[in-house]
Length: 332
Image (cartoon, rainbow, N blue to C red; front, side):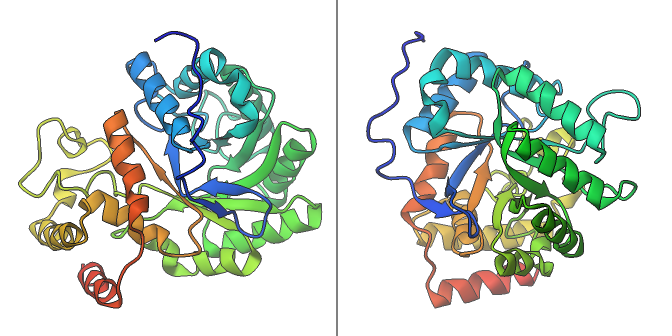
């Protein structure tokens, strides 16, 4: 791969962009997450090819966090070197995000929500990526032992210092979110977006969170739309040797009960009738909700990326399909 990358001139023609809450910012319906497959352990040229291909197809939003890898920090470094090689001319067309909240370095200042940790972590992230600012910086989780005012004031400070253009929060409950939004509004740096896990089989955010965000004009970005690969055709005939479930790291094999597999199989049949894979239907199901701004996909190949983008060809569901899906997933 030479260094003379030239982005596809038609890249904005087909991607769908959604307004993030009531802000001025648009995000692509499909965003690329760098949680897995972009660390030092992964093939650099493959990572680079995926990022180029994503941008060529109108994906402008690249989602990172301080601890993505493995090892922690390496996804930002790999992304930084790809940026430097290929995307210097395109930085202003990209939305690059990072987060801090989970364990990142030793000692009392390496996790949670103190001002000390958030500011230090972002400085490290910027250095690793070789950029002057991120577009969105998130508090990655609520800290029960730090006043919420301190965490939100740190986000406000980070935006005012120019190191991030927007503030976001991730994995906050509806109550925590309501308080966080109120503090940020008073500080004059409104919350742009909330990022949380959401899929057909993990609907925690339907506990009032999506309503809180909608009522306050805040965007919502969903991650793990395929529930770590459960919402694909991978596990319909048992657990493949190379799968996440076989490694039992994030996805425990005992989670894949016969009942769950039977329901996944029903969803799979329905997807095929729609002319989609189960993975595509699962992502489309999230995007049919106007409160969902963007869905973050994780991919390990350009082919997987293309399959994900193809989802956008069909994100509407008939009343009958809606009812069928609802009865399957709410019966789980």
